[in-house]
Length: 369
Image 1 (cartoon, rainbow, N blue to C red):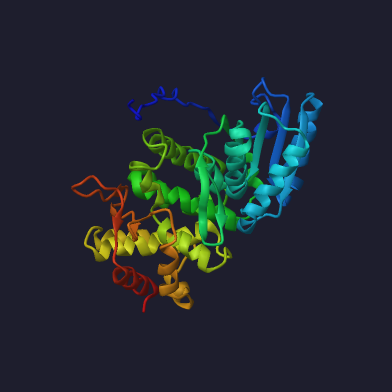
Image 2: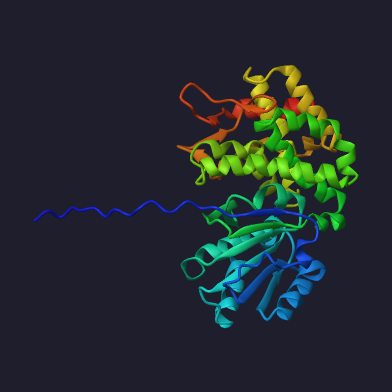
């Protein structure tokens, strides 16, 4: 008897979902899918006060059964304890597979809610409702969900696409400037790896955008999402081209971990962009003139390489080695060739191992040491 046989599972149907970008969407809930009557809003304690309670009341007026679960704002809450607490609360409330989750908040809320949606009863639907610029331009789209572990960031998670993404740009009116900058860095990253034209638009209009010019902010959100959706549609599971979205993140995630998440994600990525662009220059991939252009816009956004002098580069490198981007013990980096273009080698690799001494050299040069 042959003890080997195969199972053939047909390829999943194509995934498609709408992204709506408009002021006032939170006060008009026509975007809620009609087939769900039980809704769980997952949010943090700050967003709950600003938008969560009002959204719950609006849904209840429309005869939805609504629960709201919140946790302390910040990356430190994106852990197994918060995850388990919300799961237990949902089980106590008898939430079934016909429950819809609304992820109302920034990237931490979106990541947590998405992961809960991915694993609760083997998968239930959710809608991303980002309230920060960072979540609007990046984490709300693409289906990456995760929680952090003591060892590092986003180490436990799943790919789980939302039913839709609802971006109410009026939420930006209450956003502190530091969080505007936090999100703007992710948009800048998108343009650096994929879109030279909008990089120069951002460079030219930095002051207007930092002063909350609505039209220019909406253009930045839209253009960043055009890039993100284009890349994700080619590579949902992060196996090839989607890797380029990690530019600035190898160092950025390590910086977050070293600072015990006191450095905001976008801020850590800003320093990561500086160092990883400098690595690209040292390796003679990025022209020196283009590095100075990148350095200039990063500085205009308030980031000076000299601020890194108080950090230990060896500790940063050590933490970079506890990361999803490590293969065969080597840390991989996205390297940039030109503004708007990443480096792809002759073997069509999007990420590349870099020696520790090169990373150290880049760090010290960025610091001005």
